[in-house]
Length: 564
Image (cartoon, rainbow, N blue to C red; front, side):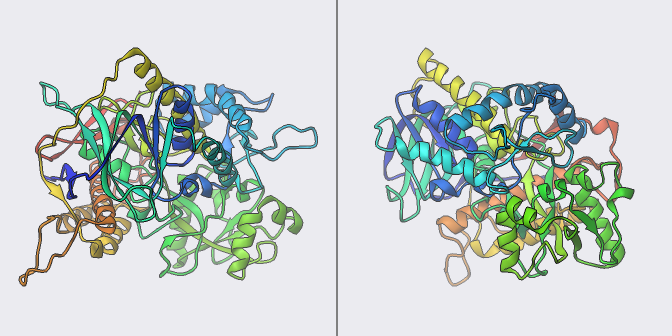
């Protein structure tokens, strides 16, 4: 039986700020939600862990997928998404994504985002793995996320003096505040968050941000693993906070390991350099360390197969050759084209002495994207009243077992807009009156920051790219042995963990790793981003979503539900 704490060990809030809506995160989802809410409710608070431009969006290279070409269609985009999701997508959510997506992208252009265009002035479109049409809009060649982030941050900066919006940077959200639980023990309504402002922010120490609604847009879980393409801020804070507040998590076991991440040796950790799928979309090939091109034997789409297929093929190829990487070969492509199409990737490779026009590029899979998260409906609502989740932190049902390339930015854009507009309507109708938080029962936790590398090793070796029942069982045991008692001391009275940023982040990493491992252990099949060597095939009985939540006493419970 696995038990997790319902709150972080932290000082009582020393200050309070109030708003109609509190948005946490400053990627495409958080910025879009804040901008939509600003014109619809009297007061919005936008909280971000670093500076506004530090979200995961800025690192997105490939682009944003939408059926913008006259010969493409939302129906075709829907079909490609369902195929990539391996039977676990919610078709209703995918239909929302593909039908509303083109309009949301055009609104993004109206907000100042500048995409690459052709000679006729229309947006240039390319293709990535799993897509059967050119529908990936990109900016600056391979700097799409940076351009989108720039445009949205500029919109926020333009209204920063508006009394209807406040931005707090360098703020780590600790826990979601909730009101009284329901008579049946169901979670109380979300009514704000506790947060710690890290030195450079506008307010000091731990405070409480109260709101009629809370929007989590905190991104992914990359730093749960030893190596990831995610920024260092991606410690699973939103998922952990939602879980502690009583929210249901879904598809948590489906982790996307990007096939082509620059390999620089086994000792490298933290945020790694992504070599975008778009490079393969333009014709680059994968070869093993014997020089053999292996993908045509694996999938009809070869290098453009869905990411899980490519990542698992690379893992198997590495095992067969006894290597720790494969090669990406773009040497047959025009050198000037590569430099113009992929300026960011080209520059980063050159920093390591690699010229992709003349050199083979060493690559290996690394954690990239989390398909699961906080379960939401089509309006972004979680199972906790008043708590919304958008972007990578959410499980909307769009991705299922595996995200289709470049659908993530579109998902953040579409569902953040929906959530913001629904919150605004609720505020206008008086359906979300102000609510005072109450203390949640249950244990509090704090994991020593010194344990983070240990937890990351367990996660990488347990629920990594290729899993097994034995390995996952060992991981659960190892995670259960990590001390989580906030008051644990050595014999001579020295505290092992004190409430501070590194410890709070490490506690979140530990809780997310525990839930992820438990879900991966329970799902006895291979599907999408979840690959089990002891259960190598998909099983029809497992065409369900695995939902996990905490009972009132902190016990982790799971149930199976239809993904639709």
